[in-house]
Length: 155
Image 1 (tube, rainbow, N blue to C red):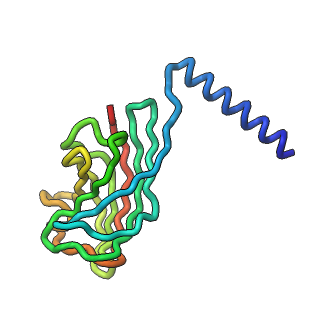
Image 2: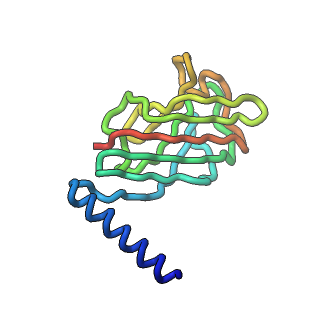
């Protein structure tokens, strides 16, 4: 049974590649990356998940799940960095995704991810002009988490 299923999966994969080739589509690229977090200075963290998918060489889908291991500095924007060149947005000043920041024991913030530099993303909550960390004003601390899900053009 396993041999039959493996053969079927291989046949299906071959058919998908043939269709992609016929349509001029490039197969999807999947990779991992190592995000950084700064809040005035670097914040030590554990990367639970940080993956990306590149579709047709022009669209990136990124996800990351980060847990802080140290503190940031209050009244400073939280910036996510470390994006490899392959997944940097086509331009800055774009809303590229959604985010969740859990300031453990204090607040749970949901907002957007905004590309502020080729390899720098800031987080904003609804109706606030300053980035998370400045408004709402708090310092990241051990145990706080940040989760991102982004979809955007890369070329």
